[in-house]
Length: 355
Image (tube, rainbow, N blue to C red; front, side):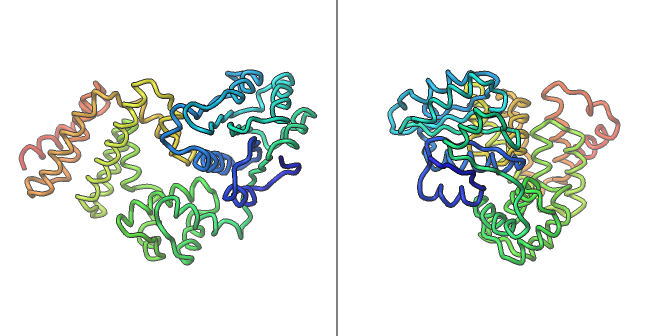
């Protein structure tokens, strides 16, 4: 067990070799804590084994004694299990003592991850636990560390990125890891099947990626923010958005959202459904979308998308108007009335029907 505090970069290097029995994450950089947690899970448990052998808990809902007992339980049908406990700063002295007893002699078959929202845990009991665990301090990266982080995160998004593109992106977006990761996700969608992001891609896309993009349209539709969806759709069309690319993105978003909603309705916890989503902000937004859309509404959405696809492929009518009409119909299917009585939308419907 480690006897010193470890900074994030060193933690990632050691994780390539092996996972430790007990991790404690503290520090101000929430994104790094979430990213580090996911990296451990990926290292220890294949996706097929996570349903039975991964638990995501909150310290406010469970005692340290209960966590210790769970950590000592053998995994199901495999050699390893992972227990993640967030907000451990909520635990009181007896809880921390129970965990200290465990951390001194941890199970060989359990990886225990403790994550705190506090920058430092200052009590004597926590100091003892931190000295026994692998204590990772997650503070904002130094300026010279951010480019390498962007390079690695781009590969996590399935793309390579040139050094010029990295520096241009940082210059335009800043050094917030959450903002940079959001932009990398959008850029990955923007470049499509290309395997690399160039500085030309950043020039072409990053100037408006943070506002009016297909990614933002997907998010607005998923959260049933109909007025925002219409605004973004209009903006994309004014900018000359590619119709097949736009529809493909929306269709893919709803297909994956439908799969997640089905898991949620079967009883899976949202943390388990979203285990592969590494960005904390994106995870929260995705959870909101899953809650917004009952599974019964998706067939209607897919029927509308098929109609739109036909309009695009056959040139039948103006796809822009049909797309706005589809948003109106999606709004109506859930009983929302915030848009249906607006004269502008009646005009859109009439114009679309005339095409």
